[in-house]
Image (cartoon, rainbow over all chains, first blue to last red; front, side):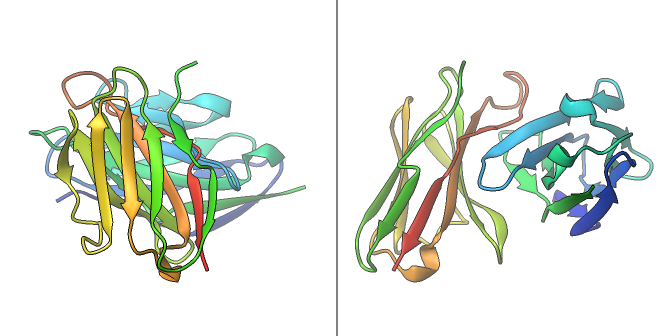
Length: 115
Length: 116
């Protein structure tokens, strides 16, 4: 069975400092992995996705994530946080085998950015 | 600009009333998801459809919830009778099935339901 674990429920950084949001996954086959962002009272927006091409994936707003199979990780990073990055971030795994394709969401990591 | 459209955006209703939430998926997408988001439980998958057929609705309380796709352009989620514990934001998302393209889902803005 697939699962995803976001290791931190809340991360706080200062503006201009790096961001690291951690995600580990469990899958019996090569998964597709995604990061979504949700700003307060908004829907979910896709930040980036990994679908077995390049292991380093670049997304919108300066975010990127690296797929590390040996560590079963897909951590999200950004070199320099901006106030507008304050939001909740969800790591998501999707199955590709058979007819399934449902998305399994992590519990989310709330990112706070201090001035 | 293709997007998933959900109506209504907000709904306040009294306990016991029927609630119907609607979703228009992105044209051409053959997979539709319904999620519920609460502070306590986070995002929960209620049901999802592939080519209008329900593939998994195990996350949905069957006694009061029902989900349908009358046609490829409309998905509905119905609660009858509604209860205060159903208060949440309900998200619809659509996408393509594996093998037909990228498998990410595109989310609507959600329906914020309050049952009093």
